Picture 1: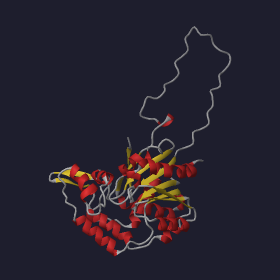
Picture 2: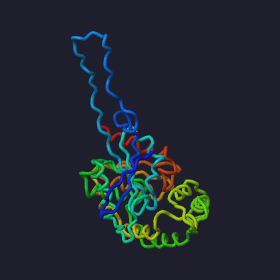
Picture 3: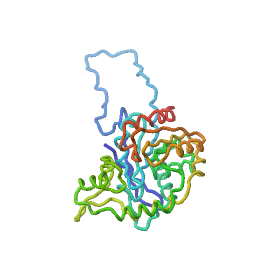
Picture 4: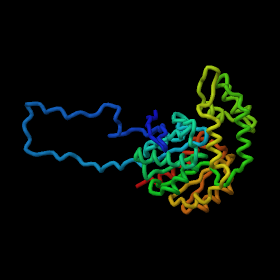
Length: 316
Protein backbone atom coordinates (compact mmCIF):
# COMPACT_ATOMS: atom_id res chain seq x y z
CA UNK A 1 0.00 0.00 0.00
CA UNK A 2 1.27 3.47 -0.87
CA UNK A 3 2.25 5.84 1.92
CA UNK A 4 1.05 9.44 1.66
CA UNK A 5 3.60 12.25 1.76
CA UNK A 6 2.46 15.87 2.02
CA UNK A 7 4.46 18.43 0.06
CA UNK A 8 4.20 22.18 -0.42
CA UNK A 9 4.22 23.18 -4.06
CA UNK A 10 4.58 26.52 -5.79
CA UNK A 11 2.55 29.38 -4.28
CA UNK A 12 2.04 27.28 -1.15
CA UNK A 13 -0.31 24.80 -2.85
CA UNK A 14 -0.73 21.60 -0.81
CA UNK A 15 0.25 18.53 -2.78
CA UNK A 16 -0.23 14.85 -2.01
CA UNK A 17 2.52 12.45 -3.09
CA UNK A 18 2.44 8.69 -2.65
CA UNK A 19 5.47 6.53 -1.91
CA UNK A 20 5.05 3.11 -3.53
CA UNK A 21 8.42 1.82 -2.39
CA UNK A 22 8.33 -1.62 -0.81
CA UNK A 23 10.28 -1.42 2.48
CA UNK A 24 12.99 -4.04 2.77
CA UNK A 25 15.74 -4.83 5.25
CA UNK A 26 16.62 -1.90 7.47
CA UNK A 27 14.05 0.25 5.65
CA UNK A 28 11.15 -1.77 7.09
CA UNK A 29 10.17 0.58 9.91
CA UNK A 30 6.65 -0.64 10.57
CA UNK A 31 7.52 -4.20 11.56
CA UNK A 32 9.28 -5.44 14.68
CA UNK A 33 12.91 -4.43 14.93
CA UNK A 34 15.64 -6.76 16.21
CA UNK A 35 16.40 -6.18 19.89
CA UNK A 36 19.72 -6.46 21.74
CA UNK A 37 21.42 -9.83 21.95
CA UNK A 38 20.42 -11.59 25.20
CA UNK A 39 23.18 -11.94 27.81
CA UNK A 40 25.10 -15.18 27.92
CA UNK A 41 24.27 -17.65 30.71
CA UNK A 42 26.32 -17.08 33.86
CA UNK A 43 27.74 -20.58 33.75
CA UNK A 44 29.40 -19.86 30.40
CA UNK A 45 33.11 -19.22 30.88
CA UNK A 46 34.51 -15.91 29.83
CA UNK A 47 36.24 -15.91 26.47
CA UNK A 48 39.64 -14.35 26.07
CA UNK A 49 39.16 -13.50 22.42
CA UNK A 50 36.87 -10.92 20.94
CA UNK A 51 34.71 -11.76 17.99
CA UNK A 52 34.84 -9.41 15.07
CA UNK A 53 31.33 -8.82 13.80
CA UNK A 54 30.88 -9.72 10.14
CA UNK A 55 31.03 -6.81 7.78
CA UNK A 56 28.62 -6.26 4.93
CA UNK A 57 28.95 -3.81 2.09
CA UNK A 58 26.69 -0.82 2.61
CA UNK A 59 23.41 -0.97 0.72
CA UNK A 60 23.35 1.79 -1.90
CA UNK A 61 20.47 4.21 -1.48
CA UNK A 62 17.48 3.55 -3.71
CA UNK A 63 17.42 5.81 -6.74
CA UNK A 64 14.39 8.09 -6.91
CA UNK A 65 11.65 7.76 -9.53
CA UNK A 66 8.87 10.37 -9.71
CA UNK A 67 5.69 9.50 -11.62
CA UNK A 68 3.57 12.30 -13.12
CA UNK A 69 0.07 11.44 -14.34
CA UNK A 70 -1.71 13.11 -17.24
CA UNK A 71 -4.63 15.53 -17.37
CA UNK A 72 -7.58 14.30 -15.24
CA UNK A 73 -5.47 11.45 -13.85
CA UNK A 74 -4.20 10.77 -10.35
CA UNK A 75 -1.26 9.06 -8.74
CA UNK A 76 -3.04 5.73 -8.19
CA UNK A 77 -3.37 5.22 -11.94
CA UNK A 78 0.30 4.18 -11.87
CA UNK A 79 -0.17 1.48 -9.22
CA UNK A 80 -0.57 -1.59 -11.48
CA UNK A 81 2.41 -0.59 -13.62
CA UNK A 82 4.97 0.08 -10.87
CA UNK A 83 4.81 -3.17 -8.92
CA UNK A 84 7.91 -4.50 -10.68
CA UNK A 85 9.87 -1.30 -10.07
CA UNK A 86 9.48 -0.83 -6.32
CA UNK A 87 11.94 -3.52 -5.27
CA UNK A 88 14.97 -1.65 -6.59
CA UNK A 89 13.92 1.98 -6.83
CA UNK A 90 12.22 4.52 -4.58
CA UNK A 91 9.02 5.14 -6.52
CA UNK A 92 6.91 8.20 -5.69
CA UNK A 93 3.77 9.28 -7.58
CA UNK A 94 2.38 12.81 -7.36
CA UNK A 95 -1.21 14.01 -7.43
CA UNK A 96 -0.58 17.19 -9.39
CA UNK A 97 -2.36 20.43 -8.46
CA UNK A 98 -6.05 20.28 -9.31
CA UNK A 99 -5.98 16.47 -9.31
CA UNK A 100 -6.51 13.61 -6.88
CA UNK A 101 -5.95 14.50 -3.23
CA UNK A 102 -3.93 17.64 -3.97
CA UNK A 103 -5.28 21.14 -3.51
CA UNK A 104 -7.48 22.62 -6.22
CA UNK A 105 -7.09 26.39 -5.75
CA UNK A 106 -10.11 28.14 -7.30
CA UNK A 107 -7.94 30.92 -8.71
CA UNK A 108 -5.12 28.63 -9.84
CA UNK A 109 -2.65 29.18 -11.25
CA UNK A 110 -2.70 26.20 -13.61
CA UNK A 111 0.17 27.35 -15.79
CA UNK A 112 3.06 25.34 -17.18
CA UNK A 113 5.34 27.20 -14.79
CA UNK A 114 3.24 26.18 -11.78
CA UNK A 115 3.16 22.49 -12.72
CA UNK A 116 6.92 22.42 -13.33
CA UNK A 117 7.66 24.28 -10.09
CA UNK A 118 5.47 21.80 -8.18
CA UNK A 119 7.42 18.85 -9.57
CA UNK A 120 10.71 20.52 -8.65
CA UNK A 121 9.43 21.12 -5.12
CA UNK A 122 8.55 17.44 -4.73
CA UNK A 123 12.00 16.32 -5.90
CA UNK A 124 13.74 18.72 -3.52
CA UNK A 125 11.54 18.27 -0.46
CA UNK A 126 11.52 14.47 -0.66
CA UNK A 127 15.21 14.21 -1.49
CA UNK A 128 14.64 12.33 -4.74
CA UNK A 129 17.22 14.11 -6.87
CA UNK A 130 18.78 13.49 -9.17
CA UNK A 131 15.50 11.79 -10.07
CA UNK A 132 14.20 9.77 -12.97
CA UNK A 133 10.98 11.40 -14.15
CA UNK A 134 8.29 9.22 -15.70
CA UNK A 135 5.42 11.23 -17.17
CA UNK A 136 2.26 10.39 -19.05
CA UNK A 137 0.62 12.85 -21.45
CA UNK A 138 0.57 16.29 -19.78
CA UNK A 139 2.72 14.86 -16.99
CA UNK A 140 5.34 13.95 -19.59
CA UNK A 141 5.44 17.54 -20.79
CA UNK A 142 5.92 18.69 -17.20
CA UNK A 143 8.71 16.14 -16.83
CA UNK A 144 10.68 17.20 -19.90
CA UNK A 145 10.25 20.89 -19.15
CA UNK A 146 11.65 20.30 -15.67
CA UNK A 147 14.52 18.27 -17.14
CA UNK A 148 15.29 21.12 -19.55
CA UNK A 149 15.11 23.85 -16.88
CA UNK A 150 16.71 22.01 -13.94
CA UNK A 151 19.17 19.41 -15.25
CA UNK A 152 20.71 19.27 -11.77
CA UNK A 153 17.54 17.62 -10.48
CA UNK A 154 16.98 15.04 -13.23
CA UNK A 155 18.95 11.86 -13.95
CA UNK A 156 16.76 10.39 -16.69
CA UNK A 157 13.34 10.79 -18.30
CA UNK A 158 10.54 8.60 -19.66
CA UNK A 159 7.96 10.25 -21.94
CA UNK A 160 4.71 8.29 -22.32
CA UNK A 161 2.44 9.21 -25.26
CA UNK A 162 2.87 12.98 -25.32
CA UNK A 163 3.25 15.00 -28.49
CA UNK A 164 5.75 17.81 -28.98
CA UNK A 165 3.70 19.39 -31.77
CA UNK A 166 1.02 22.00 -31.21
CA UNK A 167 -2.52 20.61 -31.15
CA UNK A 168 -4.23 23.91 -31.92
CA UNK A 169 -7.43 25.80 -31.15
CA UNK A 170 -9.69 23.23 -32.80
CA UNK A 171 -8.47 20.60 -30.36
CA UNK A 172 -9.26 22.85 -27.39
CA UNK A 173 -12.77 23.54 -28.72
CA UNK A 174 -13.34 19.81 -29.13
CA UNK A 175 -12.41 19.27 -25.49
CA UNK A 176 -14.78 22.02 -24.38
CA UNK A 177 -17.62 20.34 -26.29
CA UNK A 178 -16.63 16.96 -24.87
CA UNK A 179 -16.85 18.16 -21.27
CA UNK A 180 -20.26 19.72 -21.96
CA UNK A 181 -21.47 16.37 -23.28
CA UNK A 182 -20.76 14.42 -20.08
CA UNK A 183 -24.03 13.12 -18.56
CA UNK A 184 -22.86 14.14 -15.08
CA UNK A 185 -23.77 13.54 -12.36
CA UNK A 186 -23.64 9.82 -13.04
CA UNK A 187 -26.12 7.66 -11.10
CA UNK A 188 -23.50 5.00 -10.29
CA UNK A 189 -19.92 3.95 -10.91
CA UNK A 190 -21.25 1.33 -13.34
CA UNK A 191 -22.79 4.19 -15.30
CA UNK A 192 -19.40 5.94 -15.28
CA UNK A 193 -17.64 2.84 -16.59
CA UNK A 194 -20.29 2.28 -19.25
CA UNK A 195 -20.29 5.85 -20.54
CA UNK A 196 -16.50 6.33 -20.72
CA UNK A 197 -15.91 2.76 -21.85
CA UNK A 198 -18.71 2.41 -24.41
CA UNK A 199 -21.16 5.31 -24.89
CA UNK A 200 -18.75 8.26 -25.11
CA UNK A 201 -18.72 9.46 -28.76
CA UNK A 202 -14.92 9.52 -28.58
CA UNK A 203 -14.83 5.74 -28.01
CA UNK A 204 -14.49 3.92 -31.32
CA UNK A 205 -14.88 0.46 -29.79
CA UNK A 206 -15.62 -0.78 -26.25
CA UNK A 207 -12.74 0.03 -23.94
CA UNK A 208 -13.29 -1.27 -20.37
CA UNK A 209 -9.89 0.06 -19.23
CA UNK A 210 -10.92 3.60 -20.17
CA UNK A 211 -14.13 3.22 -18.20
CA UNK A 212 -12.21 1.97 -15.17
CA UNK A 213 -9.70 4.81 -15.52
CA UNK A 214 -12.45 7.44 -15.17
CA UNK A 215 -14.29 5.53 -12.45
CA UNK A 216 -11.18 5.95 -10.29
CA UNK A 217 -11.41 9.74 -10.41
CA UNK A 218 -15.07 10.04 -9.43
CA UNK A 219 -16.47 10.93 -6.01
CA UNK A 220 -19.99 10.41 -4.71
CA UNK A 221 -22.20 13.47 -4.02
CA UNK A 222 -25.82 13.70 -2.90
CA UNK A 223 -26.97 13.94 -6.54
CA UNK A 224 -24.63 11.25 -7.92
CA UNK A 225 -21.03 10.71 -9.00
CA UNK A 226 -18.91 13.60 -10.22
CA UNK A 227 -15.20 13.97 -11.06
CA UNK A 228 -12.84 14.86 -8.23
CA UNK A 229 -11.39 17.56 -10.50
CA UNK A 230 -13.03 20.69 -11.86
CA UNK A 231 -13.45 20.36 -15.66
CA UNK A 232 -12.98 24.13 -16.01
CA UNK A 233 -9.60 23.86 -14.31
CA UNK A 234 -8.66 21.00 -16.64
CA UNK A 235 -9.47 23.16 -19.65
CA UNK A 236 -7.43 26.00 -18.17
CA UNK A 237 -4.48 23.65 -17.63
CA UNK A 238 -4.71 22.40 -21.19
CA UNK A 239 -5.04 25.92 -22.61
CA UNK A 240 -1.53 26.73 -21.39
CA UNK A 241 0.16 24.16 -23.64
CA UNK A 242 -2.17 23.03 -26.41
CA UNK A 243 -1.52 26.00 -28.72
CA UNK A 244 2.27 25.79 -28.67
CA UNK A 245 4.86 23.36 -29.98
CA UNK A 246 7.40 22.10 -27.46
CA UNK A 247 10.30 20.99 -29.63
CA UNK A 248 12.65 23.65 -28.30
CA UNK A 249 12.35 22.56 -24.67
CA UNK A 250 12.61 18.92 -25.74
CA UNK A 251 15.93 19.61 -27.48
CA UNK A 252 17.26 21.12 -24.23
CA UNK A 253 16.85 17.82 -22.35
CA UNK A 254 20.38 16.45 -21.88
CA UNK A 255 19.70 13.35 -19.82
CA UNK A 256 18.94 9.84 -21.21
CA UNK A 257 15.31 9.82 -22.37
CA UNK A 258 12.95 7.04 -23.44
CA UNK A 259 9.96 7.90 -25.63
CA UNK A 260 7.17 5.30 -25.27
CA UNK A 261 4.01 5.14 -27.32
CA UNK A 262 1.04 2.83 -27.71
CA UNK A 263 0.42 1.78 -31.30
CA UNK A 264 -3.15 3.12 -31.01
CA UNK A 265 -2.24 6.14 -28.89
CA UNK A 266 -2.17 9.85 -29.65
CA UNK A 267 1.55 10.03 -30.42
CA UNK A 268 2.22 8.80 -33.94
CA UNK A 269 5.30 6.74 -34.80
CA UNK A 270 6.79 9.38 -37.12
CA UNK A 271 6.51 12.13 -34.51
CA UNK A 272 7.82 9.84 -31.76
CA UNK A 273 10.87 8.96 -33.81
CA UNK A 274 11.45 12.63 -34.60
CA UNK A 275 11.33 13.34 -30.86
CA UNK A 276 13.98 10.67 -30.34
CA UNK A 277 16.11 12.26 -33.06
CA UNK A 278 15.79 15.73 -31.46
CA UNK A 279 16.72 14.44 -28.02
CA UNK A 280 20.50 14.33 -27.51
CA UNK A 281 20.22 10.94 -25.76
CA UNK A 282 16.88 9.56 -26.94
CA UNK A 283 15.59 5.99 -27.18
CA UNK A 284 12.30 4.57 -28.44
CA UNK A 285 9.82 1.89 -27.36
CA UNK A 286 6.28 1.01 -28.38
CA UNK A 287 3.58 -1.19 -26.89
CA UNK A 288 1.35 -3.19 -29.25
CA UNK A 289 -2.44 -3.04 -28.76
CA UNK A 290 -2.10 -0.10 -26.35
CA UNK A 291 -3.82 3.25 -26.68
CA UNK A 292 -3.23 6.54 -24.93
CA UNK A 293 -3.57 5.00 -21.47
CA UNK A 294 -0.75 2.59 -22.21
CA UNK A 295 0.56 2.14 -18.64
CA UNK A 296 -2.97 1.63 -17.31
CA UNK A 297 -4.32 -0.61 -20.08
CA UNK A 298 -1.25 -2.84 -20.33
CA UNK A 299 0.80 -2.45 -17.14
CA UNK A 300 2.88 -5.59 -17.66
CA UNK A 301 3.82 -4.69 -21.23
CA UNK A 302 4.57 -1.13 -20.12
CA UNK A 303 6.85 -2.38 -17.35
CA UNK A 304 8.66 -4.69 -19.78
CA UNK A 305 9.26 -1.76 -22.12
CA UNK A 306 10.41 0.68 -19.45
CA UNK A 307 12.22 -1.51 -16.93
CA UNK A 308 15.39 -2.19 -19.00
CA UNK A 309 15.82 1.57 -19.54
CA UNK A 310 15.33 2.33 -15.85
CA UNK A 311 17.72 -0.41 -14.77
CA UNK A 312 20.31 0.91 -17.20
CA UNK A 313 20.19 4.52 -16.02
CA UNK A 314 19.68 3.78 -12.33
CA UNK A 315 22.28 1.06 -11.82
CA UNK A 316 25.27 2.59 -9.99
